[in-house]
Length: 147
Image 1 (tube, rainbow, N blue to C red):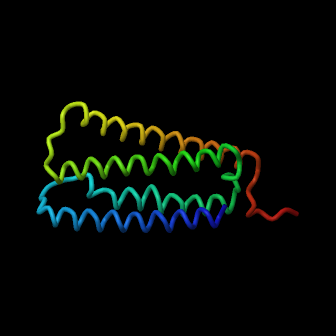
Image 2 (cartoon, helix red, strand yellow):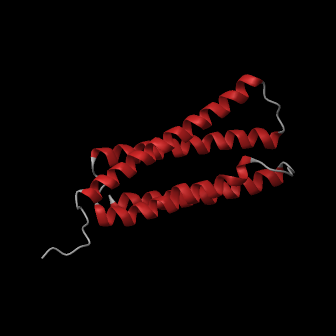
Image 3 (spheres, rainbow, N blue to C red):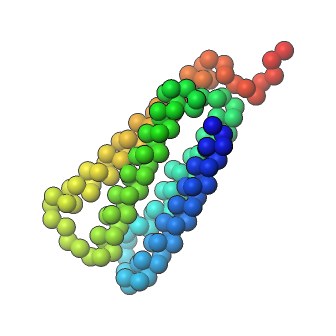
């Protein structure tokens, strides 16, 4: 599990750097001045991706909670919906930079999908934290030497 968490941290670091590069180059190419959700891709993938999984790596090393059914499902749900959220940020940002006026329906669809992404992200986080809580409560702390 530790190797998987380290790989995920590396993958999200690469995605964060790619997102930052895309924002910078795409807005420069489009000569866009102003706010776009593309400007926060970089931060979202660094914090919710790389840093989150580095923290999970440290916690997993100590409590071994992500191998539980709840922790495993939470990890999958978190990863899926983190990417759903960011994909919708990209869609929204490309529309903003392009200056496209969306009709009410497509605009609501983008917002709705982003909202579902956030809800799923929250559900994954809750599952992970419940698995951590159960492991801590069960005394699964592997760092303490047993006499």
